[in-house]
Every structure is written in structure tokens, then in C-alpha cells.
Image (spheres, chains in turn blue, yellow):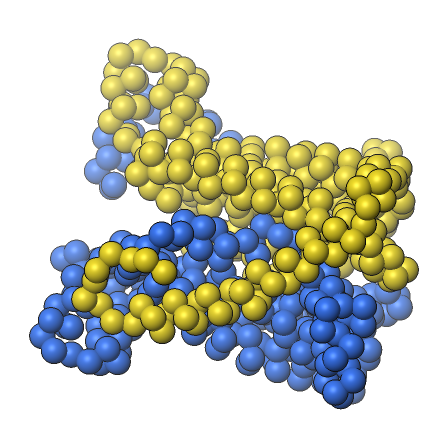
Amino acid sequence: MQTQTLALDRLEQPGARQWPRYVLTGLAILIISVFLLLPLATVLIEAFSEGWDLYVQAINDRYTWEAIKLTLLVATVVVPLNTVFGIAAAWMIARFRFRGRGVLTTLIDLPFSISPVIAGLIFVLVFGTHGWFGSWFAEHGFPIIFAAPGIILATLFITVPFVARELIPLMQEQGSEEEEAAIALGAGSWTMFRKITLPKIKWGLLYGIILCNARAMGEFGAVSVVSGHIRGKTNTLPLHVEILYNEYNFTAAFAVASLLAGLAILTLILKSLVEWQQARSLERATQ
Amino acid sequence: MKRSFSILPGFRLASGITLFYLSLLVLIPLCALVWKTTELSPGELFATLTNGRVLASFRVSILTALAAAFINLFLGFVIAWVLVRYPMPMKRLFDAVIDLPFALPTAVAGIVLAALYAPDGWIGSFFTELGIRIAYTPLGIVVALIFIGLPFVVRTVEPVLQDLDRQLEEAAQSLGATPWTIFRRVLFPPLIPALLTGFALAFARGLGEYGSVIFIAGNMPMVSEIVPLLIITKLEQYDYAGATAIGLMMLVVAFIMLLVINMLQAWTRKRTGKL
């Protein structure tokens, strides 16, 4: 890579053809700054625009705490379930050949291309008051729509692909020789999974979990349809941001939004770290 | 389920979990959508979908998603090109922040873009002086969809660009081709499938996007009302049949886009052996 760049540089006459490079680099920095960095900075600037005290006051509100709790609850249910599903689906698709494999892969990808609003709508149709099973659940004291279970279901649907999609190509690329060797040498399935499979996929798995978590905590459209927006009860953090904003309580809206922006920044940092680790372990493997 | 023989364990368990989970969470709810639509007579379905407000919302959604995906094609290409080809200060930071739209909750993106592009916002006030209103018009929707779709183009073009054979360019250069000719005849053709994939991904995402759009759109029926919002409006008015019919229409479009994207990705793989 390095030597190729040098060779190309030598071919170019100095000066004459340098300008496209500077113009394009400047343009790229401008695009990233205006479209990505500026919005991120604005969240923080708006959040603190009325000073630290008002910021703390907005965060330290009863309804904000309820929203934080619900958001954490949703993530603690959704992320482990989708992780188990992702590992199972990847094991099935990447390690075995069977009819319908392509259809299954497409089905796993489907929630990515469906509008979040549709994701909410389908659960209203199944569990809403006019839905298939809605009245049964409601009668037995376990309402799903306009309650936490509906929010969890809609979020589960939206984040189904994250872990599976990360693992399938990774495991396909790695091949199954080592696992077959372990089995042939008499290892049990659990030992094989723990000692061979898991160490090989751990970075990809972590990567999928990080992205799944970010989406689970930040999902808005799907959750908005099934939540009913009951303050202190069915309000997640993103929904709370919407309510505050629509009440023209902008500073509080941005203060709560800054928590979610912090989550996004943390996600990006973790993601970069995992990518870096992944590249390193790949390098070590090829050496 | 039929499968060829393998000594690896766990097929039954893995397929059991996978199929059970997918049926419960994805298949049955989606069937509910189709089932509910069949409760409408074909005439009612036709009347719902050809209603003026519904058609207008489809026009708004499709046109703004197309415009944003098209703009992202250029913005994304420039960023991918610079990230792959040129040294740059703070490259790690710029590279990491590309994925911000994936990581930032859409509601946060929505309110912050509305604040920036509102007539009295930092960017909005600049455009107001030029006589252009961005927030609360369809232009605002395009801005939000540019934000949401940008990483799709960058991340699909980047790996293909990385794998391009530099020797072809050097050969073209030593044979006397101008930089523009090299770009047009050597660099661009192998990038076409990846660019189209990025375009399709950004477009598909833009069509269904809700959170980042509704705060900046103004949501005027017939003018700046997107399809997902109309579905929610119908649900709030207890017009379940109407919401379901529009939802099914969007589902069909999503299926078509998924097929197109799968085909484009297969094409990219064939051309480059990557992705």
C-alpha cells in the first residue's frame, strides 16, 4: 500500500496535479463538518445554553428518570435475546447447507428495509385492541400495546438483523475446519463452541452487540407507534425528547438528547476500538 | 429441513431457535398486515391508495428520498475517495464520525437538524437571507435524509475503492491519459455497482425514515407530509384499514428495494470479489 502510493506520487509532476487533492480533501472535511460534526456539537451547545444548573434540573426530572429506566429495561431484554438469535442463525446459515438458506438470509435482513413505522404497525395489528390477540392479553391483565411489552417487541423486531448480519459473513469466511477437527477429536459441542467458535467470532460478536444496543436504546419510529406516550410509564428516552420538544421546552429536550448523543459517541468509540482489535487479530492470524 | 451431511453439531438447536424466533417476531406480524388488508374489498383498497393526500405523501416521500440519495452519491463518493486515497489530519476521527447517523437516535438528529436549519438557526438564517427556506419545507426533508443516508454510500464505496488495482491507473498515466480520462475510463466503471448499491440503500432507508424527518418537515398535508407520518396519523384516527393499506403498499416497495439491493450486491461481488 505504502510503496504503491510512493510510486504513483513519483509519476505525478510536482505541483501541477496536487490541486485536486487539496480541493477534494477540503471538500470532504467540509461535508463531514457541516453534515455530521456540527449537528453533534449543536446538541451539546443547545443542551448547555441555559447553564449547567438548568441542564442538571432537566436531567434530574422524575419523568426523565422513568424514561431512562424504561430505555435500560428495553435494552437489557432486547440485546441478549437478539444476541442468542444472532449466534444461532449464524451457526445455522454459515455452517450448514440446506434448502432455503437464501430465503432465510433475506428474511433476517428484512427488518432493515422496512420502515420503523411499519414495524410498530404490525404489532398494533397483532396485539392492539382490534388486533388478533390484543383483547385476550388485555383481559388477562397483561396489555401489550401502549405498554412496555409492545415497546420491547417492536424494538426486538427492528434490531433482529444486527448480530446475525455481523456474524454470518465472518463465520462463512473463517470456514469450519477447526470446528470439524475439534469434533473429530472428540470434543463435546459446548466445548467446541466455547474453545473454538467463540474466540474466533468474539470481536464480530461484540461489534454486533454494540450496534444492536445503540439502536435498541435509540429506536424512535417503531416505539412511537406502540407506546401511547404515557409519561413516566411508556416513555423511552427518544420519546421523552419528542414530548419535551413539542412542548417548546427546548433546553430540556436537548439536555435529554445530549444523553443519547453521549451514547452515540460512546458507541462510535467502542466500535472503532473493536474494528482496530479485529484488524489486529486478523493480522496476527495471517502472520 | 433437508440438509447435506456435516459432522458439526447443533443444527437442530440452531435451526429451532432461528425459525421459532423469526416466525414469532417477523413472519406472523407481517402476515397480520397482509391479512388485515384482505379485509378491505379491492374497491376500498383502491380508493384508499388513490386518495389525493395518500398519493401526495407518496410523491413527497419518493421524490425527497431520490433527491437525498442522489446528493449522497456525490457527497459519499468524495468522502470515500479522500478517506481511501489521501493522507489527512485526524483521519481516525473523521472516519469514525461517518457512522454517526447509524449511532445517533433519529429523534435527536431530527430536533438538532430542525434547530440548525430553522429560519433563525445557524444554517437556516444564512439561507433565509438568500430567500431560501429549508426547515418546514420539503427541502428540510431532503436535508434530514442526506444526514441519514450518507454513511450508506461511503461504506459501500470505500472497500471497493480500496481494492482497485493502482497499476491500471499508473499504466493509463504512463500511456498519456489525462486525469479526467483515467477517472472516467479506468476508475469509474468498476465503482458503478458499489455506487448503485449505496444509492439504493440510502433511498430505501430514506423512504421509510420517520424520526429524523418529522421535526424538520413541517408536516403539511399534500406538501411536506411523508408516508410513515400519514400511517401514524391514520392510526391515531383509528383508521386501521387505511393505515394497513398504506403500510402494505410500503411493505411491497420495501420488498422490491430489498430484491434490487440483493441483485446489486451480487453484481458488486462478481465484479470485485468483495463486500
